[in-house]
Image (cartoon, rainbow, N blue to C red; front, side):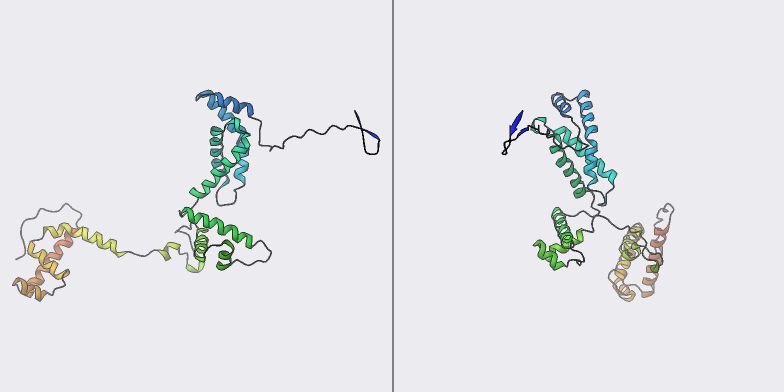
Length: 285
């Protein structure tokens, strides 16, 4: 067929090239499988078709997982998370609403992002702080895009993001919460091989006090009432031996002997590993 141009010369019609929609290499044509899946009820046949769909679209899930590499999480773990998102997308997809890829990409991407949000924090932080962290992280990257740009200050980040300096400071602290340093990590060689725990840990003597009190309970219960009263006045009321003697009508030497004998009895009972000998009933005079 010939057509006439504005110059009057006839020119043949050139058929236009068919326009095909560009597809990724990992986007297979599975429309028939999805149509079949939507008609099947739960059972072995449906599970087999679903597995076939998952296997066909798995390369796309791996491609999406690759976008999040080098963010502190291994690529193998990211691929597993993306595969889980793919399974959810296959189960929930309705072939009548459009192309599977348009539904699966945001579903898988959202699953990976939720993994970073909920699973990769060494120190769990509130959702609000996570949002501040992302906002400040993007702002800092944008402010440092120009060659030679210095590290933005707290005030500069606050002005750029519209946040307060306190919120920016909280977000910057959250940037370090993805990973934690082991307490066994060795510091510099100048520290003689000392670990981080050597500088952070302290000895809490309160635990020793609790252990000692529990250890002497049995021995104290075995003392006579008078001996327990003398120990209480001496070590809890901080009374002198003379004051105790005056209150009980005893001599100071007698009180001293009773204190020594009672303490030795309680100590031996606490340190003894054998079965306690039944009380004979004999008490110091």
